[in-house]
Amino acid sequence: MSQEKIKKKLSKKSIQDHKDNKSLASFANISYKSDSSRRRYITEEIEKLGKGNISSQIFTFHELSVATQDFNPETLIGEGGFGRVYKGHIESKNTDVAVKKLDRNGFQGNREFLVEVLILSLLHHPNLVNLVGYCSDGDQRILVYEYMPNGSLEDHLLNIGPDKKPLDWNTRIKVAAGAAKGLEYLHETANPPVIYRDFKASNILLDESFNPRLSDFGLAKLGPTGDKTHVSTRVMGTYGYCAPEYASTGQLTTKSDVYSFGVVFLELITGRRVIDNSRPSEEQNLITWAQPLFKDKKKFHLMADPLLEGNYPEKALCQALAVAAMCLQEEASTRPLISDVVTALEYLSVGKGQAENKEEAQESSTENTENNTPDDN
Image (cartoon, rainbow, N blue to C red; front, side):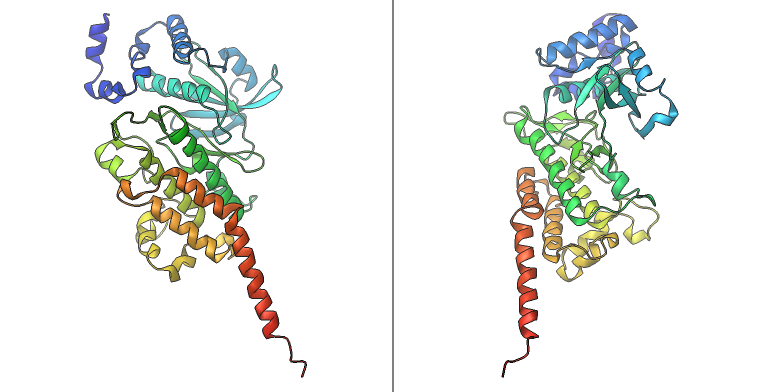
């Protein structure tokens, strides 16, 4: 089949969706190639686009089958829209890994696979998950990541089992600050900027010290360059986390990620899911429930996760909710840059914020002691 006929077969929408990302346009005919030539083509294109900077290892399907005991269900550690994730062990590296086996075939599945390999091979930051390697044997599309022993933020915040303790306040702020730094790197250091497009609790992984790393970059898009203000694309992502302007128009900017960050930050503060149909109707949508409470500081304590049992600095709670509210502004232009969010959260985590809160507590304690001291006379 000629290239011209193949292009006609692709929907105009799909072609338009990928026009702004020239590095992926050449992959439009992947699904029409034979297995062996397709694997070679993908490998060659990844290396070409990576300009020799791709350091990820290429695994065979057999190697990953051995690492996961033939993808034994007992090694399954996660399952999402793009496939299942298994815990594995690479003998040659003597290291545990997370092996994500993509279950989507065809054009879209290949696009997600290639985007993830390119982004995680070319961009490196302490708050982005490390890609160990990948496999493209035949129809197999498999990604191999470093293993994150504490799973996802969702596991510790929204899916708390009886054997898990709820996250304390400081850990929640630590996770939020680290995740924001990951977004800051994508938005302001990567060139061109990268819009994550799928920021949510299940995509934030936690290492043994609860340091966060962003994962699942299959939906990421290159951001606008030059005098462009946005990228136009199909609306994809997870309901509840998408910014309103993106959901209604398909116009994507880095401020769309800032809105999604605000949603997750509010989940961290409240311990509530963004959409929870088990709650009363007026509380099922977290953002709708929170908006009127944002306007009354006297009600801020009602928004704190009950599992915190009041163990948080009141001033820090107010500041955290103020940051979340700014990120959740309806108008994208009024939301802060993610770098401003990082600055605010660093202040709240181990910087001046905690020091000031500690000083206030000490002053209050001293005043109470003085007031309760009997007169010498």
